[in-house]
Structure formats: C-alpha cells, structure tokens
Length: 317
Image (cartoon, rainbow, N blue to C red; front, side, top):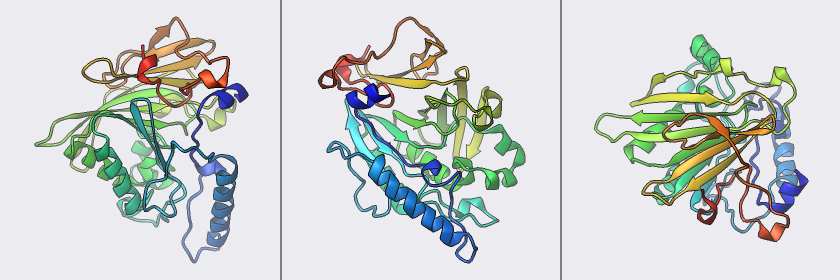
C-alpha cells in the first residue's frame, strides 16, 4: 500500500466510517441530533486533513459550498466523486421519495457534468452500490427502504438520475463503489418509451483487507440473474457477476482504439486475476494469465492508478 500511494494519484471520498457507522442526520428535536451534527463536523475536518490530498488535476464542482464531491479527468476518462454521505437529509417515516441522499444543487451539478462529457467514459464514484440490488431490501418493501443505508433508501435520487441518463441519451456511464466488501460487476440497459436504450455498468470492489464475515456482504444478498424492474418512467434490466469473496481489489482499463470505448475490470483474488473484458456488454468473468497493471519501480514512471483510475490510451490493451 505504501508503494502504491507513493507511485500513483489517490483520490479519496468520505463515507460513514469517517464519521460513525451508517451516519445520517436526525430530526432537529431528537436528543441525538446535536451529537450527530458534531460527529459530522469532526469527521469532515479529519477527512480534509488526512484524506483529501491537494491535487491540481482535481476540482470541486462549482457552486457547491458544503459538498465534498470532486471531479477530475484521467487519460480518456472523466470522474465525478459523488458525496452521498455528508449531505443526506433526515429520513422521516413515510414516503421515501421525499428525502434526498444529496441536495438538488448536487444533482444539477452531476447532470451538467454528464452533459459536458458526451464522448468520454464517465465514472460516477459512489461509496454505496448502485447495482445489483439487495434482495433483503426488495423482500421487505417499504420497510426495507427505511432500513437501508444505500441508494434504495433514496429512490427519488436514483429515479431522477436514471431518467436523465435515458432522456439525454448519455452513453458510457460506469458507477464505481465499494461499501459492501465484495467484488461484482453489473451491466444494465435503461429503457424509456420514445428514447434509445442506454447501457450502463456498475463495478463494485472489495476492501484490500476485509477479514470480518459479519461486516461483509455475500453473493446471496443480491440479485444475480436477470433483474428487471421499473424506476419511475425507466425500465432497468440488470445482470450481475460476482467474484469469490476475499481481500480483493479492482483494476479498471479503458480502451478507446475502436469506434466505441471498452471498459475492462480485473480483480485480484487469492493470488490470481479474474477479468471481465467489457463491462457494458457483460462478457463472462474468466481467469487472466498476467497482471493487468504492474507497478513501476519509481514514482516518476507512473501515470496511472491500478486501484481506481483507468489506464490512459497509450497503456490500453
């Protein structure tokens, strides 16, 4: 890890454990509200001091005063690190669509960024997994939504984002996440009457060190066969593939040599590499003979990140 941090750019995003497990705000009159606000201030302060490293290539979206979101370009790809934790609204019992994972100004900024990068591969980095969906949340219905800590708890945000992607026919969108402590890749087709179908992908990577079974999600917790569901006016058809459990990490590559970009994902599992050649088409997970991104011997030779960022075009395979 020290060698990696010396050699490659590293971009961090705050989630609940930078504050407290499953942090969210409480109602203002609740006795815990002041304590939770104090914990948020302390967590955000420590995040800025120890994790949000200055890098002239990264920038905060314009006009978002309280957001920790970050955008940057790397090679032929664009990244939006989306703050889905520190801006959450209090979830009152009732209609989950009324609450927000992040405010309208953040959603407007994300939409503008998606429109400004029509030909780029666009990575939306979200701590919480977007796809596949959790079976437990589906089986519990509205009560499951109230118990969830992820996107299921804020369906209005996800509906708004999916509808915008289809309406504007935004291509080449990949969601990156890592909160569940397991590795998987999901492909999905978003459909809406009168609009062209749009393919998206969701890549989820495990922690480098995840030894506690009680804290790790399992494959059987999620939908893995064909999962067709409506979300607002959009019909989503998703399929997921899972990597064996363990201390894993992902290497993501973008290849722009053909007419359309291809995004591959390699996962390091128990001493071997497993690969999905094209996350948008959902090619099958298979063993790979060689390491996809060997680390350089010296920092000056390094211009890509094997943990998060895609390899620039000159390194694409």
